Length: 144
Image 1 (tube, rainbow, N blue to C red):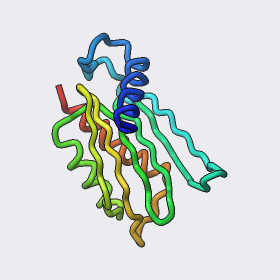
Image 2 (image 1 turned 45 degrees about the vertical axis):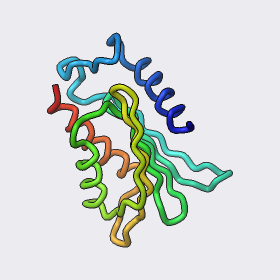
Image 3 (image 1 turned 90 degrees about the vertical axis):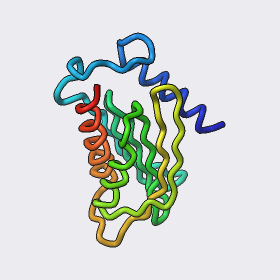
Image 4 (image 1 turned 90 degrees about the horizontal axis):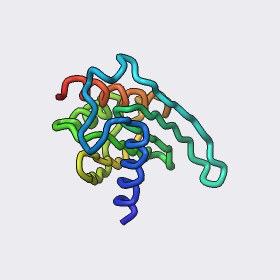
């Protein structure tokens, strides 16, 4: 139920960012070559979790450190093969996927990962969300 709510909220948020009507995605030619990215970092005192997020027309990506793991949430337009590419990027960056939940509604998908931070991983949360965001944006350039 919570995931459906998240999906609906993200869809509403994505619709407010996108001027195109209906569930059909915007053509690639209308997107700028370097889409606007909103990056934010925060330290929540009540949970002592370090988090970063990166939002663009292609996807909303959020990462939070929780203990020795990272909770990664991605909301984007559904693209065939996208999840395999995201997992490949995470493994290349020395993360191990412990759990993955996929929820979709119409043309929007929510990926919720729990990933283990590898010993050789040297990335910050900001760098992680930017890497994931970049892989999703490159997927969206080759569709349609």
